[in-house]
Image (cartoon, rainbow, N blue to C red):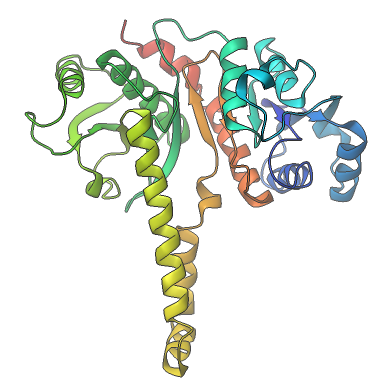
Length: 335
């Protein structure tokens, strides 16, 4: 059986691993059986989980690893451990034996080990962390979400290109529309760096995307644009604020609909709409952040997600490879 994508999986990273990792692989194979998994981890434990999920030998290879990256390891200390499941999975992609690497483990360690072992794409000065973010119409790509606190105008140009390339890889039928996150929509607003980036993106057209100017934080979910570019500090704050708001709304709605007989009857009447609302805000659907700028894609699954969330992040892995993400960036790079 031919396999279109080979995924290097750090099976030992994140909560409840490798149980959720193997269960996530099993879940994903229900919808896509053209993927091969190189599973890095403790062979005895991984084999036990694979037998529980009855996954055919045609879909995986186990690479035994003596060590793991712990949650409390510093990025640099983790990078010094050469026999961890994370390090060896990343190295497998570096050696071109796999197409993409995924881990639910220590975020800082994953990024540092990836950057130390993989080359940057030529003319990309800094990597960026991108993620999916729902809007009224479909999905946004938002970057940077924490890889770079300080950025210059060239970084913003690179982020626009990489974000658009990711958007086209994940959603090939949609037009990519890029905007810079700012405190206002007028050209005169914002700091000097973002103003310079605005002028460059306005004057230097790219066939991969349409530049749509500035966007304010309260319009992120309108769906008028689908690639939103910012620095890592602002992006991370915006992401955590959005996550907190979504959790607050879900919690308060659940509380309101369980208080009193009338509220309970109302929730039963509207159960179909409530299920749709809950699904729309389910963070598992958007699991899988992507480190962009390296020669191969690096996917970070949320450490606390369950097997459904991990399965969704595997879908992101496959789409970045089949959508030729790296080729799109290289072809359209602003030199």
